[in-house]
Length: 338
Image (cartoon, rainbow, N blue to C red):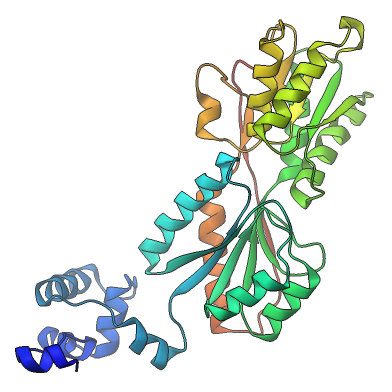
C-alpha cells in the first residue's frame, strides 16, 4: 500500500478483491481480464464491468514478480523510409494491445542486429522479440539464446537457426512471372535489393525460376537500394536504354521500389504499362492508389504477426519446443501496372 493510499483510506483494487466481488477464484479473474476463451463470455463481461467500476488497473510489477514476465516484447524494424515497416508497427501494436502486451522498439535500420542490440533486449528484460527486416548475427542469437529470450523472425528466415514466420516469397515471385507471361510479356528485368536477405533471394529466385521453365531468363538487374529513391534512379537509367535493349516488364522486389521505378520511368517519357509493365511485392496500401495501381503480391501480415506472437508465447511456456518456420501464401492482386 502506498503512502497516499494510507492517507486517503483507500486501497488499490486487486485481482483478489475483484474475485471476492465476483464470487469466483482469482485465477478466473486473471483469465477473464486476459480475454481467455475458456471463461464464458457472460462471466468475462461481468468481471470486466466490475474491474472498470472499481478502477482496476493491472499491477505490472506484481505480475512480473509472480510470473517472471512483464508483458514487454521487443520489436525490431527495418528502415523508416519503407512504409512496409510502418505497416508492421501499426499491426503489431494493435495485436499487442489486444493481447495485453507492450512493445519496445529496440532497433530500426537496414543493418544486422549486433551484440549491442541483443544486450539492449536483455537490459530492458523483454520476454521475447519479433524481428523484421534486420538480419540476426550469430553472436546476437547466441546472447539471446543463453539468456532464454525467445526470438521469432517475421518476414525473414534466419540463415543459421531460429523460428520464423514468412510469406511464401519464392512462390509469390513465381506467380508474378507467370502473370506477366500470361499478359504477353517476353523480356524481363529485376529491381533487386542491396541486402542479401532470405526474402529478397527467394523472391528473385522464384521469379527467375518460373521464367526458366518458359525458356526465358532475366535480361537486366538493377540495385534499387531497397527504397523509393533507388527504384526511381533505376527507372531513370532504364528510360535511357535503347528500345531494343529495354525489357518490357520489370519485377521490383518490394512495392516501395516499384513505386519509385514507375515514377522514374514516367518522368522520363515512358508509359506504364504500355511501354514497360511493373509489378511489386508486399501489398502496401499506397500501392493501390490510382497513380500507381500496382500489381503486387500482398503479404498476409495480420496472420503472420498473430502466428509470431503465438510462437513466442509458446516458447516462453516451454523452452524445449523445437524451432519452426511457418510459410504463409501471399495473394496476387492484379492491377493496371502489369
